[in-house]
Amino acid sequence: MTGRKSPAGPTGRSETAPPFFPPAIESKAPFGSIPVHFPGSFPNPRVRLDPVLPEIVLLGRSNVGKSSLLNALFGRRLARVSNTPGRTALINVFQLPGFYLLDLPGYGFAKVSHKERERYQALVRGIIQSRSTLTGVLWLLDLRHDPTADDQVHADLLAARQLPVLVALTKADKLPYGQQQRRLKELTRSLALPPEQVQLTSSTTGLGIPELAESLLALVEAR
Image (cartoon, rainbow, N blue to C red; front, side, top):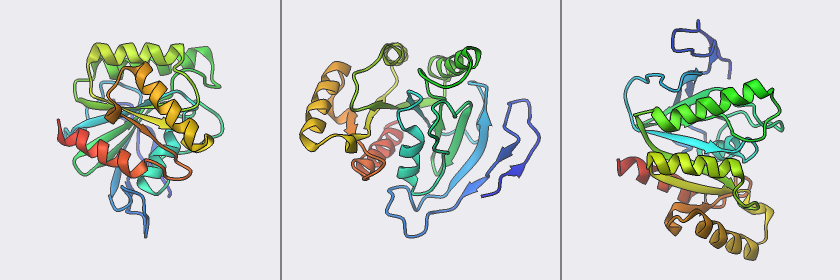
């Protein structure tokens, strides 16, 4: 889709932004039939979105698979998937009927400069700590790995803010079934979250994607 040109305003909207993603044709994705608007990409964690709606942020390390998961939920390419971690540099906002999804820059490892990495971190911290319109967090963690020091930092931020958190354990297709179940139990225990807040997912096979969509809608409705 060709992006339309618009001047960058005081909120810092990017100069190119596809304004609309139509429903995916014959898609089995849980959000495939939902039209999605793209208000823009923003560098300011306090950017005002109009209309005011519930907001869910997508949080995770740079290489955890946020873009792939987002595309799997919607059955079309809403987010750019890259082999190079750290490509999401701004807050990418997707407006759905009734709520927003805010795709944040990945934290941790990214092939960018130290200064740019610090900017990413400040943006993510600003969203979690100070954005008053947040409804909840979809936090992505790689099923294969234990939480890192960066993950723990963000776990502490979420705990301090006391936002509702839904954890998606990504890349489950990389492990056989038995190891999937073992890792699910281990990570649920280490995160100290109720089992219903932690879900196995795979953007490749579609494992857990419908259930994740239902949980996201429930999170919005519980606001």
